[in-house]
Length: 69
Image 1: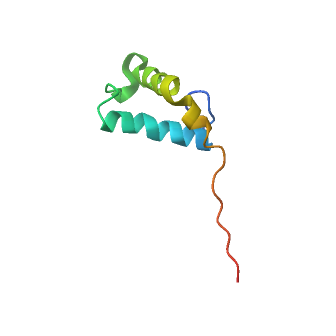
Image 2: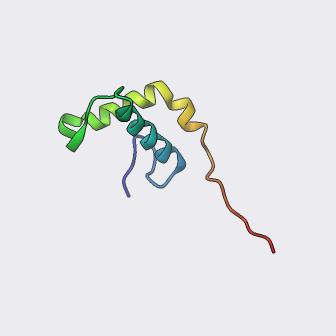
Image 3: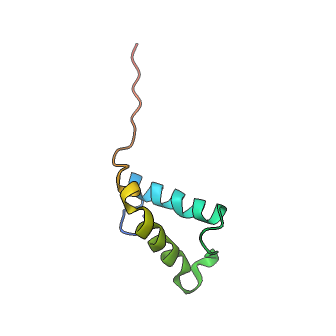
């Protein structure tokens, strides 16, 4: 399992952080970090956390589905 920043990779926090990181690339807010040259991906993830940690950590539960007959 891969950790994402300070979060275990199988958590909602990690998933939200990854999405925000990737949106940063799509919106051209974060520089390219392909192949993680010189730790750029980690730097970008830390930048997202600096700005959006509160939002990442506000997502604390994975929604569950239930079915009833």
